[in-house]
Image (cartoon, rainbow, N blue to C red):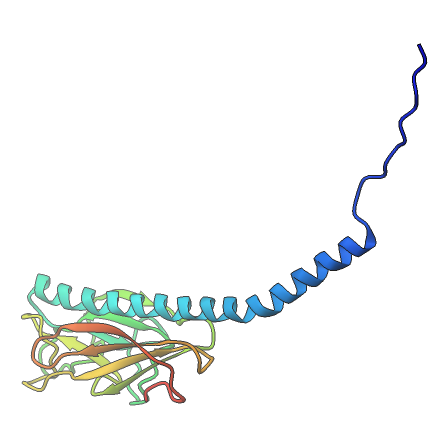
Length: 194
């Protein structure tokens, strides 16, 4: 019995198949990468809003639990407050027991006051700005209401924005008289606080 030799076929891709595949990958990448970048930036803004909202709720709950004033203030050092009225919270913040009696000052870490939590600066080029009277600090009284020294309530909003104007923004607002904070997704705008 005679065996016949089968022709040997080469395995692999032809040059045409390879070029078509690379073209499809290139077109898909050109369309998909901007959308992926936008998705990543939206996720970063959302995460930063969650961290800020968590810290505000923590500050309020600690004030009620400890039955004393607890304050969250802007801080780039992690030990002292930055009181300059710029409203830029991107550099970080601290939460501390703000219970020093007069002549101690609300919204400033006085001698003997305990820092409970510190948040370092956010990475990236996004913005975290505040409006109203929460530009430097938010202080909660022992009843859970956001208050300055006397009866004036903290009323204002935090705006979190990405580096791109097309990024969906987040707004965290303090409600007057209750200390309640609420977060909402707001549309794109040319300005972060618009």
